[in-house]
Structure formats: C-alpha cells, structure tokens
Length: 344
Length: 79
Image (cartoon, rainbow over all chains, first blue to last red; front, top):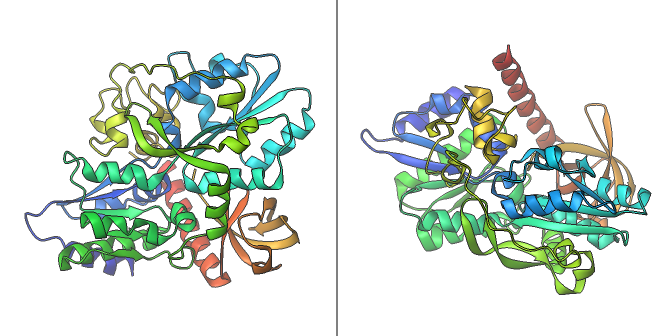
C-alpha cells in the first residue's frame, strides 16, 4: 500500500514544478525523518518542518524568569524535561537554576504542590492547544493554593497565518497537526483554503497515514480546489473537542506574545484570565519581560519559520549538538535540529 | 510534546481514571471528556496524562501498529 501511495504522489508532481508542504508538528517531523519519507519524495516536492516545537519558540525572557524563580528559597519550579535544558544568556534551568523538578503531566504538578505545602510550586507551562487543555483541566478540578502557572502557551492557527503571509516561504499546503486538531477541530483550519487558497490536510502520526495526507494535499493542489481534508478522522472531529475548548476559554484569554527570535505576534498566546490572577505566576511574582539576546550564529528562528533547514546552519552538528545545544531547536525532541541530528 | 498514545480505560472515578496500553497502567485525567460519554473499556488518546479524545479499538490497534513499525525503523536507524 505504501509503495502505491508513493507512486501516486510522484505522479502528481509535474516536471519542473516545485511545491512546498509544511508540517507544523514535531511529531510529524519525527515520522517524516525517521521513516525516510523525505528521501522517497520526488524532486520538486519539499517537506518543510515548521513551528511545531513549543520549546523552541518559548521566549528567552520566560526562561530567564523561570531560572530566577527557581533560585528563591521558597519556590519549587516544575516543568517538562526539555524546558530544563533550553539555553538562555543566563544559562539553562538545569545549569543555573536551583530548586526545580521535571514533570511529565500537569496532574503530577498538582500532586507535588500538595506534598510540598511549604513552598510555592510554579509550573512553567508551555505548549500548543493539546498541552494547554490539560492545564485548564487541573484548574477546573481545583489547584492547591501554593500552585502557580507560568504560562507560555501558544496558538497554532495564528503562527500558521503569519507563515502564510510571509512571501519568503511560499507555502503550497499544510499538514495540520493531528492532536492539536483533536482539540481545535479540523474546521479551525478552514481559514487557510477559504481566505488564502491554501489546502490543509489533518494527518496522524504513522508513516502510512501521513503519506495518505500528503497524497490528498497534492490532489487538492492539482485540482486547484483547496479545502480541509482529514485522514485522522477517527480521532479528529470537525468541531474538535468542545469540552476542552470550553475549559481553555474559561481559564485563559488570548494575548499578544513574543516567540523566541521571531518577536511579538498579536493574539498568538494564552494567559490566565483576570479572575484567576491568584494562580498566575507572572502577576503574583511581578515578573518583568526581559529583552531577548541573539545566539551568535544560530538560525533557529529561520528553521522554525520554515525559511531554512537545520543543516543550513553553520553550527549544526559542529558547535551545536543535542549534548551541547546552542539553540532551542537542538534541545527539544520536537525541535527540527534535534530530529535531523538523530536521523542523518 | 504533542505525542498521544491510544490506551484502554480500565477504571473510572470521574474526573480521574486508569488507562492501560501494552501492559502499562497509568493514572489519567478525564476532565476533557464529558462524564456521560465515557465508560470502562473505551479507548482514548492520552496526552501528558489526560484523555483528549475517544477512538474505537480497531483505530487504536491501527495507530499502535503504525507506531511499532516506526519504532522498529528507528531502532534499525540506531544500529
């Protein structure tokens, strides 16, 4: 079956034509890189990794604030493993922080806060919609009084819209992220075919499913009739998970936020609503925005925006490796540089 | 970050539950699915310890099969 799909994909790329298909999910890039899908694609079809890594786009300011918070005696900072190693000009949480702990789930954060009553537990919480919903869930069930959220959540449809408007990239189609779509719904991507004429297909994470998605995208491009396709139908509904959406909207509000090395993007992030200011680490601890520094030689910003491949960077595999990452895209297992390092 | 795995619900004490896959059991949160729409034996996609969506057994098996193939390829790549 896979061979058949690849043959059909090849037939759909006319000679001399160049098409750019972007994925916006680290797990999709993982599948594409580790299964060798990219190497099977015909010349003229570029599969570009886009902003699918929330660790990579988390602003340096939030990381520096997290490091400083963890140095307070009365604080325990908790966050996902990758966040501990992301570099900033003040080092990383693991190298320069003091009281910190890795977690794999927001429920673990609640348990830690209950057990560590004497300290203020701050959850440095990052991620796109899929990872925001569980945080809304713990807020809904009730958080311990000593638990605070440092929200660095970002919205996927907004960054994709920014990419579409950027003529340097020239995207011909999107593979939409499967589990973000499970939350926001396939219909959330309709803006792309309807307003920008760009086809979208929601896909899952197995190689075969991803190839089917790619095939459907190419058919749309060939027919000149863009729409939102969905080959991950058994998990993603057109309207998405409305319970999750309701909870996210109940606790979070959309805000203008910075993306690392990219800058401010209006209405692209989420912060806690005023009613829940008591749990908002930024407000409770009076955190200030720190001006971002540039990492010399690092082109993570261009990699995140799909303007460059990881191996276009002169630091890639030389000064920058997963063991000694210079830029955020090499740290996270969802970062394009990390994924390319492991698969080439 | 957005990795989600299909698991089978084996215990429900809403809004919490226990789900199982490949012999591994995990406590999960069920807040993102309405109480009336889930029952023991249902398959769900679990992401960072929370069920984010339901799916049926055939689909869960298909996803696992795909993941296992991918893991096999990655191991070959490491060798």
